[in-house]
Length: 194
Image 1 (cartoon, rainbow, N blue to C red):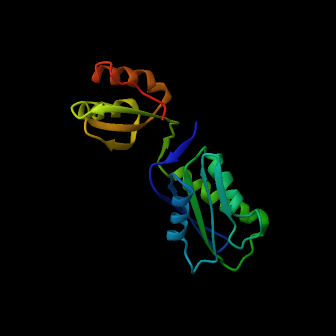
Image 2: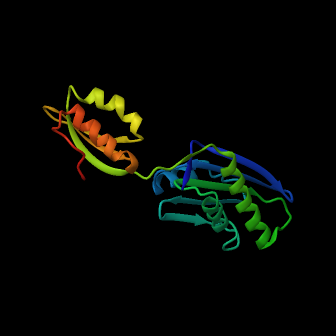
Image 3: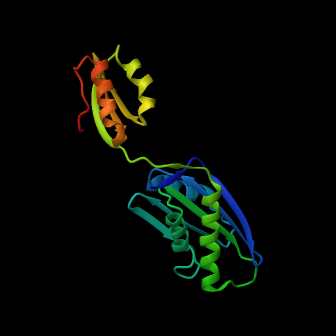
């Protein structure tokens, strides 16, 4: 089971006179990850190392540290904490004492792990996409009940009689949601693959 963060979190640590600040946040895409990195990177710092993971996509960057000593350990921390849809940026101000490759990997990976441990997390639910069409009178009733099914409306397209909804449905809730949809539409509507 995978988790993501409920919101941004931060962890600060000093290791042999080098200051480390780890910042983490939930993301939904590579573009959101890059926007977070661009926004919070500190130009005056010695290094801004990062990693992110969204499903099977991931990236990491050592930002001038020896290869494999920063970005990869941050990614390992993300995976070690069973996180997904997360970006972690670790900012380092060099303190004059070299940490060595092992020390760097422990510092970056450890700061990232402690940051993720400190953040509030929620379980990620894998959802399937379906569509349905509801008449205007049925929409408010359906939307009011949707929260009970751990499902989300991804988009709405209105027409002359109502709206076509694209839904993200938790697999365990599909049958129950299908029954609700049938009840509200008097058997006229069902969940359809897009």
